[in-house]
Image 1: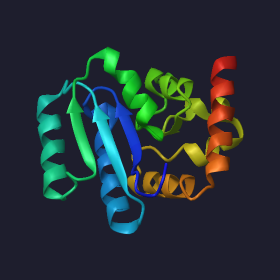
Image 2: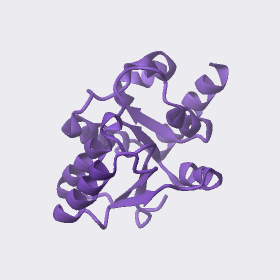
Image 3: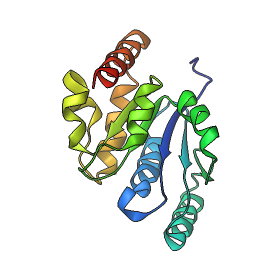
Image 4: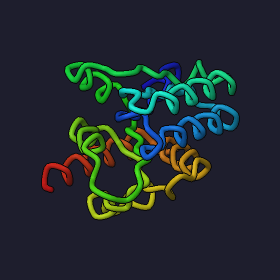
Length: 170
């Protein structure tokens, strides 16, 4: 990715409070105001909680984030690989619990992941501390993103390969 190409952060899943997509939107607001890198957040998934979905869209408009946060709504399953392939990192805001398949699908397509779910600690191995942020903490999520993308391209490639290998071995 050249510097003109924005970094792409992907959230895939239902638009519902337990999934916390608002935390990623809030992290996007922090990043937009404090980071020089260009980025786009793709939020992909069905609005299973319509009032929450509407509130999220209103917040994006109100905070002038429409240029950096795109809510795609429900996307056919066949189109999801394109989103994963295009993403630089899959961001998952779910609480600790089962391992979310969207993260595993991301790793399978050699996309990095940042999560709140500590169930990924073992899988992430030596990179766990860099890729797991404290649940519902948008400031820390924004910080993890900044630190991750301050790394060299070589280091990011090494991380992608490491995580992909771990995933396949799992």
